[in-house]
Image (cartoon, rainbow, N blue to C red; front, side):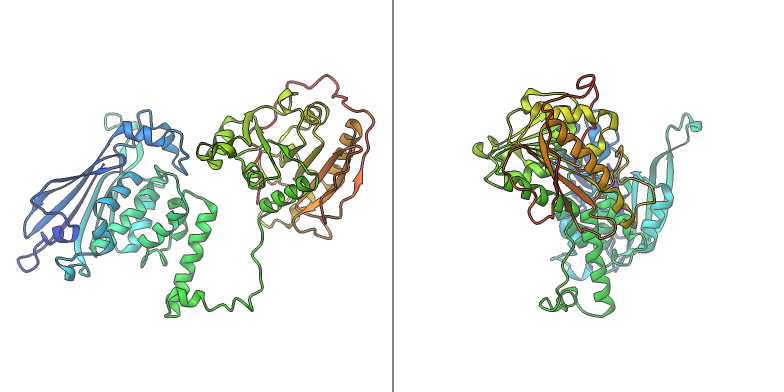
Length: 522
């Protein structure tokens, strides 16, 4: 990866002042170690009239693979191919952005102890990046850099010059020209290089919001493509994007009122402000499930269709649950659950409480027998209706836990989602979504067939016209004394007499949908 920064000067203001600002002497070639290779800084030309500083990042492909193995990439689709031939070592990306921050840290902060007067000066700058991934093409490059005062030239590079009929690649040769403080120019590049690539080579954590806002201070608040920049830089992680947008809006309001953001933020009387933040529906579901499991005095719990393990993590926080088994048909989901739960970092005692296993809920499984409780949270709607009898028998007929908790969307509530088109289900993978009456009929019939009693409760705000967004059924083995969902106004029905009866034709060879948990709309 290669990038050059050129400035011009005169006898009164020599161009070699660039060396002071970059904290790199023009007469020396220097190298710096980075996590993915070696960064070289050199000056191809340096005199009073013209000075060019070059940053060459020599990426180590072996380090690139080792650093990426087994870790979530947080929005870096190309990194999944790190062990194969791709553009990571050659095209400017988040790797080069990180090298910029590492090698030119003081310059990016606007620090120059030797010549502090240079920091505030706008310099005539020319920045060249020979190969830049640009998802969005030259048009997006222009939209991102031109509002910042740059003259932009972004030339599409052909896929192969020998075969022009193949057309252009997604790469451009970028040339920026304009008068700008060097610190500002470096911060523009630091943010916008990974935005154009639309990928990062590392996991996007919450601290990325602070990095973005520090680098974007003074220019991101009013940028016309602010949403694109924030969304791409934060790898489209919705919660982080919302947090960043809220803080940028606060900065904009503070600037318009000529006050500091902290002063504006503290203008709210916290004692008078009684409005509470809405609790996400996913959190309410977990709380409702935990309430049932506590009241059932369950100690050994199955999370069937555990997905990335949010419920498993919540169960681990409570000492009542001594054994927790997460089951999912998707190995990818189980790997994500292992990463989220940090199983490799748990104490031995804590790790003994949890186990993640691959399994299909359409087959009977002897590993699932003998548990106090099983949870099917937002799972059944991902199963084809014809395959539900197989799941029913595997859970209620074969595994037969003392308590079963099932949650599923209430389709009647969908009219309250403003962003959901009429007649559309909440997730593309949903095979169906039931009304309250349909869910009660199904649950009552299941309880009847397998010797359970069932009670129902709402999850989320219980709308007087359309009911709650999520409906919950608590199955208790007939004769068990466990209570229903506390405070939910549950109704108990269904007391079966045909215990252990399987579906017609056996358990079937159907498979349940992969990675069901974590797909639901919040």
